[in-house]
Length: 271
Image 1 (cartoon, rainbow, N blue to C red):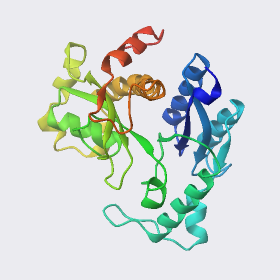
Image 2: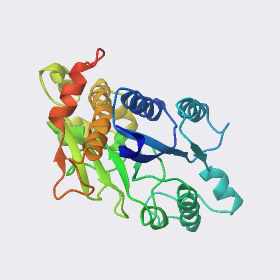
Image 3: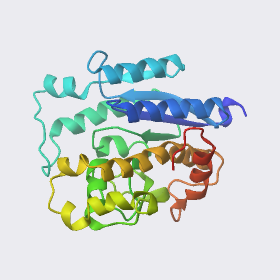
Image 4: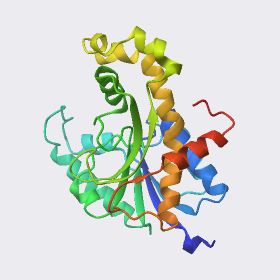
């Protein structure tokens, strides 16, 4: 397959941790093994030297030959005298200005689809109104919203039996844009029954988020999700690149079988 036949994507990330780095590295590895995708540009909302994990990701992207665009959202805010928004408040005006500049920079590159993975900014209309973006979310389409920490805590507090990974179209409705694909997996079974016994839902309901995050059950559920989010990303992009999945589709596509096959084929697979 020639490069012109491949799905061209823009990858947006903050690159702040091992999950962001690992996902992009996994994608480049999958491309090397035949995934019909090209990374047209990697956009990072940080500058060089702002954070060591981000610098590692930038170096890795450049080593794979991907163009990299950097625009520090922190520096942008400070230059304009903007304020840091508080949870529950409307986004600050500078955020719309920032996204307009991001859109301007991305317009220099030819790509079919944007992917936000570990991108820690809520996108605004100047950005998602100009391009189509997919966002990864660590839950099923009808599951909890919020960060992965908040999602896992809510799953424990509600005594959920399963969770999943989802890709949705980025809109102004955070984490609730049209679902494109998902996979599901058990989070309550014989393998972790003892951990659920140690932290029943009624006990977790009275615990602060940080306390829930410190429990073995939280770590177990997080590990199950992390194991699947990378093959899920690749299988979603494969389905789009091969024309089997439209964006958005009439109904979200269940890729559980494909993800479990990919996971089982990995030497380090645990679940």
